[in-house]
Length: 281
Image (cartoon, rainbow, N blue to C red; front, side, top):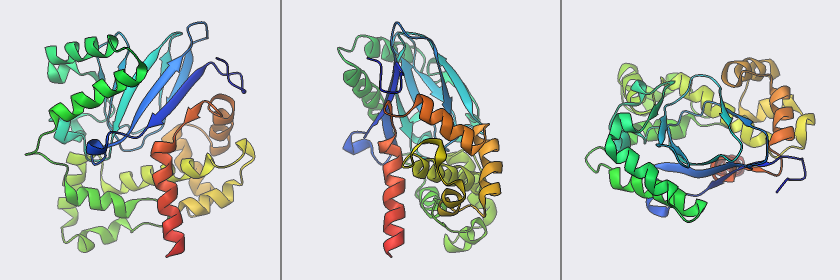
């Protein structure tokens, strides 16, 4: 089915199963119609690790990224994936996040033959929803009760989030830990130092706000201020660094390829909800 904007590809996010919401921010499904042209999908750094499986392939583990990546999805591609909350992946994957930065590995490299079997189960699913559920079940099976996500890092992420979060310099004293220890634990859990995490979270806040606006005519100066940037120039520099594009070009791309066919509610709505809560306090 071709959408109102002429697109023949879709991306949608779903909420994870309730018992996985402490570990996963969303489950996602992406499809390109068999008769369509190949689709180039841009991913912007968000501080997260993802486990995904293109139907018919072995699952892939994509580590936290320092810059934008572009994946080419061939006609007929169907991909299901889960996105870990920042800091939650090591307790499932069994490796520190800094070892995965800017890498995309077949899960076979981590799990051996079990990864091949997982890909076969995903391929045999009767529906896309079932395929996604199989991927979630694999995460449940690998949860290590003895290696739970670092609660202190989780609290640091919460405080660093968008909408005028805590200053990085204030985190060590407020969390009763040295700056060196905080950096080490953030690198192990997320892959990055707190300042880098803050930049990524702030840009995700901008993207969440921008998707509420009507296309590329959004007031970038206002959005920059609301997302916590010093000014529009600050936003432009961060957009070039994290997205490889200007904010205006990024919004135009979203208008052309994402409107009506990309659903980011599972990851953006919690950000917007926290913003609304902050404004009422």
